[in-house]
Image (cartoon, rainbow, N blue to C red; front, top):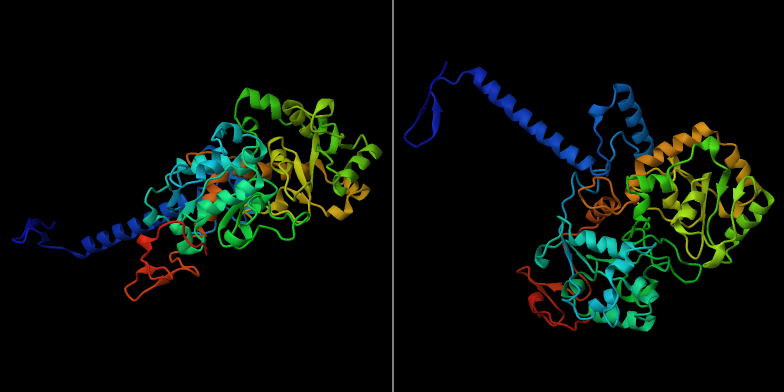
Length: 466
């Protein structure tokens, strides 16, 4: 056995280092390398849905891997490394409402009276939830110079609904805010994130096409061309996010179970249902007419905004879970919250909205757990098709839906599968390492200057917007 002694330089040396020692050292190095790579891969692929494989049998593991292959396109549930990286590594700056003149108005209204909690409910609650989750995120940075992305919070849909800002005020206030953001001007807005959670999308800001045409927009709405000349959604820069599902139906407690506990397929009263207002839309009116022809197959009551012809929250979910298929036709815009709610009552969603855009299409195979039927073919043919699907096939789709519905929940980062995790992965794909715009220039020494050759750190508001 060789002995180890300390030499004069203070380093350790071996008097008899044989070939076995060298092979052993090399083996340790190789094992360390591969262990590190495996750990990196585990971190990257566990961000969608981590489960304890030790609690399942080998047969169950094979079945689970097969289900993931169907839903995610691979045997592990995670974002593809190509274009995304192997793990989340983001630095996002979140503007504080008091640091930019006008930002508080976009969040609280002209009199600063709108409370965050009052805007966190309903289908537009994502404007609050995304903001609050980013404020608490481990990927948040307080240093603008190291930030890769910048989030501009705004609750304008809620504020407008409460009458605390009108359209003109919203437009003027947005422009006022943008004129004070030097980093927005530096990149032309490419590294700035805005959220518009309603069917109107970015159209709530009338001048979005002028000022936000390069920025990243988070929205559940991919099309609003029914009332606008142009859609505000751009598939190459923007991100479709899930709508805001009521938190109570996702909680794992007895109250939740009583509200949305699935009914066995054999005991469900209807083949399909549509539980929304007609709003004068052709597809919805066709469903109401169809339900009168086939009342034992399709439930589609004529619901109103108020009065006895409106469902309460509990009544709504009790009806929603009582059909095998939940129909989601286009309304004022292409997306509907009913698509997401259907997963929590284990009803197969049927999309009847041709222009709809869906979240996380880079990782989810929607044809494995939902149906998209042409809106131009709403009629008896639709019911006949749905009636031809066996309960075995329906159960298989429902099981796959269980794998992905966690992606509709806006939960903290401690929850490995959530809408916020998905949004962060999509944001990571948008990161640029170099920023420039029509009003950004640079010199031989790498310094960034304005058109008037003013160094970037000396840019002062109001600034010319790109």
